[in-house]
Structure formats: C-alpha cells, structure tokens
Image 1: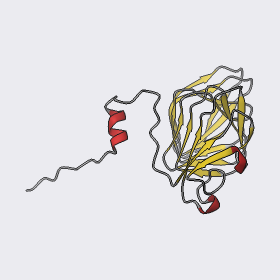
Image 2: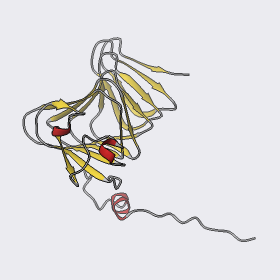
Image 3: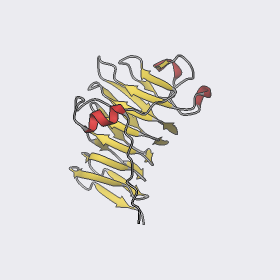
Length: 194
C-alpha cells in the first residue's frame, strides 16, 4: 500500500503572515486586476468613480466586472478628518481593506461579497440594513450593527460583532459564524435563519 502526502502551497505573503513575520496589522490581499484606493478623507458614496484612485488607471468604482475589470481590491486608508463611505449597492470584490481610524464604512443596503476577505484593521464598519454574503471577515475592530442591522449569510467573522444601540438586530443565515457578539443595547438581538 502506498501513501501519498498532501502538498500545501502558500503564497510568500501568506507564509510570512502565518510565521508572524509581518506586522500584525498588515493586510494580505489576493492579487486583483485593479487596486482601488479611496482617494481622500472626504465622505461620499461607494459607487462614485471620482472617489477612487485605480492602479492601473482603468475601470471605475470597485465592483468586479465594472468598467471591464475582472477583479478589484478596495482599500480605504485615507487619513484626515472623520469621513463616511456609504455602501448602498450590490458590490463584489476580491478583497476589502479598511485601515483608517478616520473612516466609517456605512453599509445601508445592497449585498457585499468578497472572493477573498474583508479586513477591518481600523476605523468602523457599520452594517445598518445591508447584507454581507459568502465572505470571510477578519475584524480587529468590531462590525457595528445598528437599527435593523443587516444580514450575514455564509459569512465567517473572525472577530467581534457589536450591537450598541437600542433594538439593534441582525440575521445570521447560510451557516454564518462569529467569534463574539456584544449585545450592549437594550433589546438588541441576533436572529438565526433555519
């Protein structure tokens, strides 16, 4: 009888991160065709092309397929006064990285899906009516669910969910998992779909 050992291949960046050689706040992103960066510490809607700087300079706002670009990485890291990026449409990305303490992503409607991961290292991600689907969320800062919250479906959250407001709610569906939930607001709740 012959045994075959499985071979695991890791990218250099992932291997370095696994070995602890990168700074803990470093973000490992998949290789996308275009990297889009929110270009200034100023509020605006996600789907406004002028709010993003693309490298290479093709396509439009980050959404896989937009402007003929197959895949986008989206990075929100502008430093300056507090600002809000409003996400209120369906968006699919390779990866999303939020790393500015000045930024809030306010996900009010539509579905956000990533092929890779949503990496929340600084700032705030507020889910207030939208859906995160079929993604992995690596959260150094918690996802805040306000008002009717939103839906997490097929999502793995490596980090905390925070329900700070009165009557904050969220629905977990499609095998969604999370590490910790802080139900701080009176009457805040998590619902689980069958």
